[in-house]
Length: 135
Image (cartoon, rainbow, N blue to C red):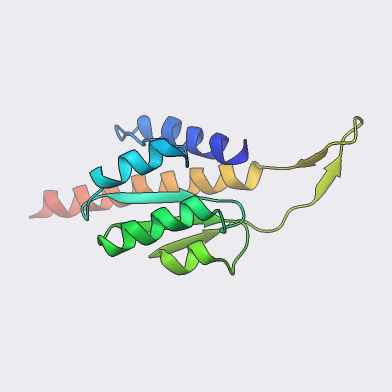
């Protein structure tokens, strides 16, 4: 559920800048989509542990094709981060037990990261536009 929420937030926030993110589940749909991804694409792979076998396998396939990859994981040392060009990490957070004895982990840091990426992307676009206006 955490990974699905993160992907939905990426889609929501970047759509306001006119960019579409495709939320691809790590099942059969991902395998069907892999042949359509090429070296001009940029893929963000979200895996809390960084060890999800299907995502790691997809990253290997995409890396061989020259696709630029970025991972978002919680653990610094993981298989996925070693396959990606850019790696972002979320710090360890505390687990809290709920009244019905479930464990709850805060996802706030993921959403803050997405907002920071979005604002930095907007700054990049503005700088790029300024340079083009000068020319």
